[in-house]
Image 1: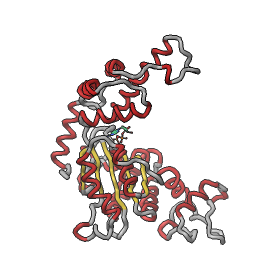
Image 2: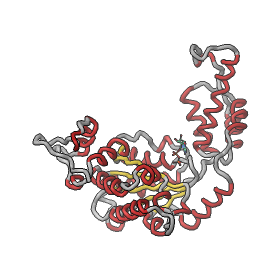
Image 3: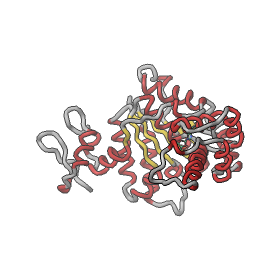
Length: 343
Ligand code: ADP
């Protein structure tokens, strides 16, 4: 057990074991109150865990906004009501209007679940804590539950706060009586305890879990996420928006609206991140062509490349295939009709 942070008379903190780490010093100060003191809740937590949370898990400025996310109007509306308004107006959202404890975002990979988590933090000005559950179980063997306790402790001192747990299934999967590692079991238990505690005080703290494998969640975990929102593959319109948005960043494209319609109809079944990959691949053809014609990669300017066109997308479609199969989609839809929230 590491000692608690030593407290020099001037009220700032230094790391234990003579680790004169400027980083540790700074990150602990970030968690301190205006008086330079660590809040009571954090005093018994290990400084290196607090440091890790402050440096690696806590994001101070999320710059994602709703407008950066294509489509998903239903999810945006529902999340605004359930999460953003209560974070902005806790005085209205109490009693029978008190917000749910946890939000589960589920659906195929690359559909914007992480973006929604960041947009919630960005739109509500909440502190955003983001961690992948698989890193908790793999990197913090034997210590994961301490990190979980520290994470919820820090978040409750930095409210309004959003804790976003990616791949939450790897933490809260159905109990495997045999084979489940003792340390994973302890992390899971600690996590369920912390989840149970959310909302018991007046803290504006929201937990968001994201998963591509909702079927793996056990009943106890499922119950604790009071809202379970399906984040599906993007519609044709949303796919078109993603393409236009990415191309407009560079400006060098030449496509009519019927070209865009063709791209949208050819990309049925593509996720948002598949669309990203497609645009990247398409944008490589003009460069490859210029290099083939003798241009030098060290000297070429973007003006010397032709604009990206429909033919590049046609070629890229041969290379970039959708990452989600029809059969997987069917499984998400089944789970949604059984456990998903309608609004
Ligand atoms: P998930 O968490 O669902 O696996 P992400 O939110 O990490 O997926 O999305 C991965 C990337 O795919 C994003 O960084 C973004 O570039 C793109 N993307 C996915 N969905 C959308 C969307 N709805 N609108 C805009 N971009 C998207």
